[in-house]
Length: 174
Picture 1 (tube, rainbow, N blue to C red):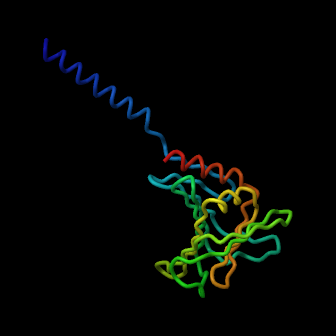
Picture 2 (picture 1 turned 30 degrees about the vertical axis):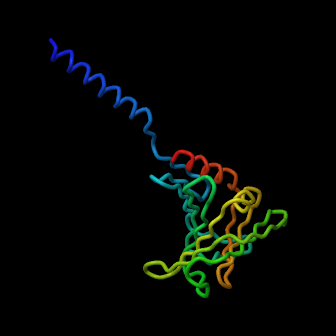
Picture 3 (picture 1 turned 120 degrees about the vertical axis):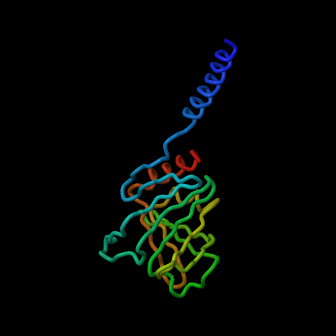
C-alpha cells in the first residue's frame, strides 16, 4: 500500500511537470506578410524577403536576396546578399542610410555596416539598425543603403507596418 501511494505521488509530480511544460511550450512563429515570411528561430527572428522584384521603372535591384534579422527588440539587421558591394572594404564600418516616404520626405542616418564575403561567391552587406534609425524605419517607406559606391534599395511598402509589427511580436516570444 505504501508503494502504491508513493507511485501515485511520483506519477502526480511527473504529470504536473509535463502539463506545466506543455502549457509553456509554444509553436515557433511563422507568419507570411506579402513577399516576406517572419520565422522564429531558437534565438532570433528572421524575415527573408523572397525573390527581388522590379521597381516601378522596370530596373531590378542589385541584390539577389534580402532579409531582416532581429535577436532583441532594440536592434534589427537588414541583410543584403548577392553580387554587391564589390568595392566596399570588408569588415565593420560606418554606413550611409537614406530613408524616404512615398511623398518624398527623407531622413539620413549613419548606422554600422558589416561587409563579408559569402561562401560560393558574392558578398553580404548587413546594416545594423538601432535606436533612432530603428524608430525612424517605422515611419518611412523606402530604405537605401550605401555599400561602397553601390546603393542597395529596399521598398518596405505596402506591408511595412505589418512586417515590423510581426518582427516585434516574434522577438518578444524568444
